[in-house]
Image 1 (spheres, rainbow, N blue to C red):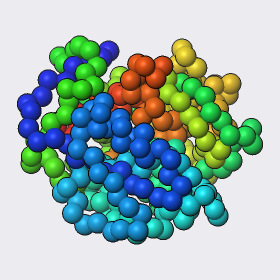
Image 2 (image 1 turned 45 degrees about the horizontal axis):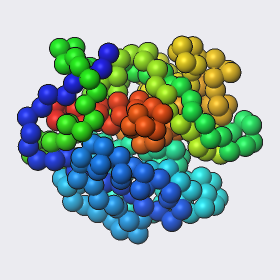
Image 3 (image 1 turned 60 degrees about the horizontal axis):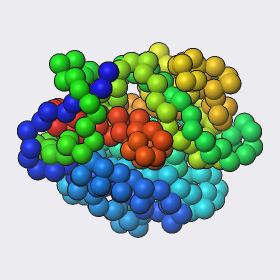
Image 4 (image 1 turned 90 degrees about the vertical axis):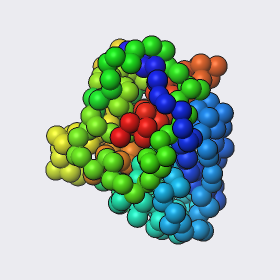
Length: 282
């Protein structure tokens, strides 16, 4: 089911994008948020701390090879000044999406549980994959219609607060990232990574699954989760993961590279539209 966003126009949503040495998807995310979704977008430099949390409705940590992936992918970026601020922002309920290297950075910073290992193939994997939403949603079923990328760009002025604990409800269906995506829906998104093999200890892994903190699993086009649809060897085919309070998500595939049909898929728009809808309606 697709969703038509029918919202009162007001102040535009403000998004922040981190920039590290070695980031190479920051401009891709910028283009999608600004030109496809018509948001206000600004960059957050890795050397800078920030405390004006009310200026950001959500923050994206984009893909790339921050600090050349030295030591471990995301390890140095996780210890940067900007991540110190982002941890504080997230702890207060601010919405944070980490894509690919951003997922790795969130793991290294402790905002997500587990770790990333080298792909099972020991190769850089770059292709389209399918992921299944296993988190459910909380969308309004009366809002039927087309996926309206360019017309969902205004946010209520009293919602421009990244520190209001909107997502601290411990309910995987009440999260910003999949609230417009039906449970078990399959998305087609591209991957491009060398270290995307998700790992966690058995007890931690079972806790993540039972508590609804696994957002997406790799699957085939029909939604079947199996070894042959797993591009990197991730345990339980995990491709996306929520933080403790569901206001943080790490995602290995790139939704910004699948935000318009001309790119071969616009399924990534469903994730950004969910974030926008959530901000406007919570």
